[in-house]
Image (cartoon, rainbow, N blue to C red; front, side, top):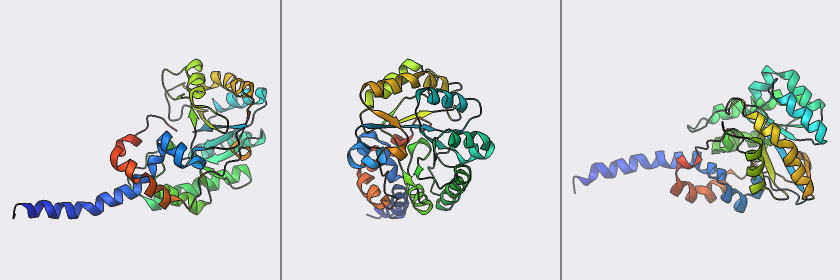
Amino acid sequence: MRHGFPAGRTVYAVAPVLAAALAHIGPAATWLPELRRRRFPGLAGRGSPGHVALTFDDGPDPVSTPRFLDVLDGLGVRATFFVLGENVARHPAQARELVRRGHELAVHGWTHDRPWWPSPVRDTRDLRRAVRVVAEVAGSAPRWYRPPYGILTSGRWAAARRAGLRPVLWTAWGKDWRHDATPTSVRATVAADLRGGGTILLHDTDHASAPGSWRAALGALPDIVRDCREAGLTVGPLGEHGTRGAPVTSVATVTAVSAGTAGTVGTASFRSPAPG
């Protein structure tokens, strides 16, 4: 029996650490598409059934983003750009051009990092900083927040709530960050999960992707829009999508619902290869 005491004390000592870790990373289980679609449709970006929200992550980029703007102008489509605060600070003229051409700016964070270790102060500071620089460029406060890699920790949920942002992820993506992505593969990958009311995730830069991978998304863009229109769907920004996003007060609910999933799947399941 005496040999069991050290193990027992270790369990009691480790339990609070494990509980804190689960509380931090538990909400990130919403990265799992099926859980998100079934339990959190607002977070998944579900909107009006006759509309598709077109969104881009990681910009602005002075080389690639203008090419997307030209294609979108030619298609007569407006989109939502989830921008990084550091990129807006580096390229304010490009960010202003997004707004001038009628697109919606949303927040993707300050940098493109993975939040595996809890840091509530950092999360709040960086998100407020990103909101401030985006609001200065857009002339109005942003509404939407999509964290890098789609990883919503409890700290980032709380930071979004304090900043007045509504988290929204996606229902379909093009896997356009890959080194082997092509316009054909991006179009097919989007089409596999795209339905009316869905939200598409693409990237207008290779900031966190394989070098030059943005060309695959750019090449696929006209066909993706054409596919939507041929299906009778309107394409536009989240502001016209009819979704409310995820309520910013729902972190406790998300943690409770996803705790079982996180406990069985484990943190490794959230190591998305996607830049998001």
